[in-house]
Length: 215
Image 1 (cartoon, one colour):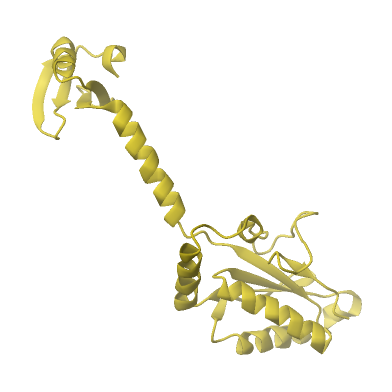
Image 2 (tube, helix red, strand yellow):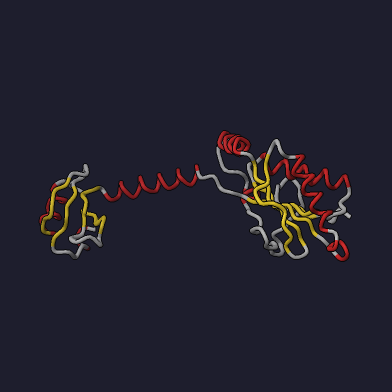
């Protein structure tokens, strides 16, 4: 910018985007001084480099505002995790299903993991039936994004909210004037990975990953 530019001549662009042409660097610097603007290199790799007359301080301020607005409007994809056992108690199942429903209504994806232990590993159909039951009971809120698959001792399925449900959740968040609480923004481990210690909390009002044996 300005005297830091080392090229002997530059392709100059005016403050309104008009093409001035190729001029010596000294001439470009003089034109910038005449209109109280900065000479900013916008395409340094071009031959000759392209420079524009602008108020660099104002440009940085407006760029920061745009970046902040873009982050505010960005829809972050959050993946929650719900762990179940193949022989889960009916009451525990209803509780965990309630958490899944809440996550989907909030616009989040849910990674549902069936954990097999001991001889349960020889009965994968138990987990498959449980996942299919859950799928059939949340069809008004979401759909299966990743079909059930065996991953070692676990069986995993990923649920995603319908577009209308997610849009409603985003609109509700915007109406409250800010992003969801920090706990709700913490993504679970990617599909096929186990969350590190400390990353899995008991399901409650925080809306984070839940784990109960359900035996």
